[in-house]
Length: 262
Length: 274
Image (cartoon, each protein chain N blue to C red):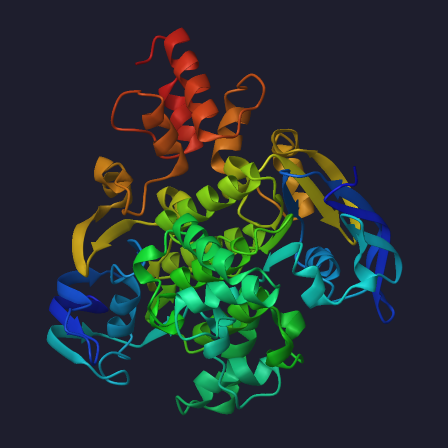
């Protein structure tokens, strides 16, 4: 079975920028997995999502070498949900229906998909609201619903919990896990490192546009180099274990720590 | 001596909707306080009242000896620095340095002092290298730091900040924490609206919890975070280090990395784990 998304030796430059934002990036994303992209701001995680989602260079311009293979539909959630409104819908329901309507589906299929998406992201109660009156957190979930309604094979998420309070963030992570369980491939750029031991199958660490490490979350997150000043860091638990001067590799979660100290 | 900030039985209603009800609390000089609670609990209303964008329906908001309902927002800016949630979109000058200088200039700081204040604020936010750039050429986290530097340059008696770490990566969060810690050491009281309890635990001391427009907790953050699962009813989740303190029953419920690490080392030594 082919990977729903595969990048081979991808180098990409934004227009009017000499330095490539991505350098020789190769990765396969599998159905049913959550792959997390970590890295400091400017490391290339957002750019990788734009390339994977066919916005760069197609819409943004710039220059790409290497190949991007897609098997199925990819959909992208930007970190700034207010820039992602269609501007053509006066209710949350119509906003969520906008994507599917553009796929040429039947009215019945659109309606079923919209209802399912509104419920999964827990915004069904907002269906009649004007999208421009929503809070940042509500809007982020509505845009997420709009993306799910298109029933993508690959879900590309850029900081999906950035606008959310901790409880809402936890429920979005739970949703991401269950979508992957249902067979979707999920690529998520996040700075919520503490969520990753339980939520990500694999982690790709990007640095200056290149993949510095790629592997199972448990392996990548214990790399001591993550603690360098300009690096994204590991989990809070790993950090405190190291500050305590205890033996490598550090535990990544509370329960692993309790286990280690037994 | 009067408090830096004093809310005396403040009520605020948006029409029929009562957003705050009989809220009272005060901050002393240099105090570092987190204001937390559900979305819609009234946190932003508190911020708008303190910065003079709203006037209380009842009660009084005092900033030092000023009644905020008798002052215009630009007058209050002499004492209150603020960072709103999407502050990175509120920059307007042609360079970061000019933007940071706007506040001190507008509040009548003498020209000779403006330059040194701007230099200090840029250094505190770690922005010296990009001081001459256009704010919109910077990535969003640095724009947010530029807006923070603008508030720091006012050297106000009170800083009110809404989600100062949202959207920031670890190095940028570290810069915010260092800048605020330094500012508080100079006597500025901090009132920080935040969902980022990791950051709050590390940088602030006291927690105020708003729920449905009322203050339901006012306690040291360590005591507040020790509520564990009880925090969820307030829209909060204990951060990992606090959950570790709970899981290992660490004495005194430490929540800061250094304190947790030293407690962890003791447990490891006792259990003969190296």
